Image 1 (tube, rainbow, N blue to C red):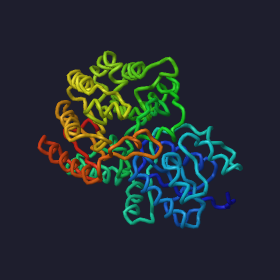
Image 2: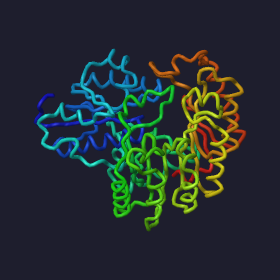
Image 3: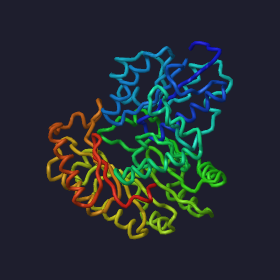
Length: 426
């Protein structure tokens, strides 16, 4: 790594999940504490940090294209995030430079051996990184808006209004794909890694071993957020419901403790896989009745038991429906979101319609219909026959029409975003 007198760093983390944005915020703090200057124009940077996501092929392509773009600048490029692991072959084909992955962030120290403060000395952050890129005209205005508290409140409020009115989009559930500067939420990441083994997913390669954050540390972070004036909290992880499995605790133990804390606050839970919700439903229901939890995202992925089995996910769709309906009865204002995959190999027309019927029966508030994306070297790669792209596109169009008839507002962006009754998500 070159030794610059004026160490200017540009950090780009668009179209990545909130957890990777938290990683990038921590990396940014690592640099600022070591005397580097974070700038908002990549053309003026000495070093560029690019965060990536490989959740599906379209996202991976977006970030691979970004690698080709940013390597053209007169700066040292360091690639971060999941793509170096999820799309290793494609990544290595176009890039042979410096990189760090989600499971080894501390590798950043090896590229900056002269830094006195090491990465593991930097506290984990509770507000995700927001990218401002002045090389793009819309981001020039974004920087101006973010420099003023009053202007930012107007800007964010106006955009939030538009999203609700026209898209029914929610930046929390959808990982803030527009990269808006919402800063009134305090995020607590309670664990790293995933205990699942979904047959189509490669993200686990990049995450590393499952590790829960110490119980008392989660409580301390939450109380700090309250002391700092926050009233809106996000509890998240790569596999949120698995919290505590490695430390003799459970996710409901943590929620029980958090919701007993005095104060005027609300909690949104992201990435709660059905298997953990169903295992802990009796205790979870009691906590939901307290009214502190306003929203929960439960990625179901399919309404067909056969397809769920092929996905290596919890495969009793009737039990999932019963559980979600039970939660709604426990707290009628609870907002429930989900992710659902369209076109998994061998999925029949009837099985696809079972997924749509699940939305109707559970009265999901907001969600995504996502076209299947299968990574190389996954179990699903060998499942035949595959559903053609034309058929997947037809099913998405059908799903959009079906959801509109149910009263959902829908928005197409390569996938289908649908929602209604979403105030609790925002």
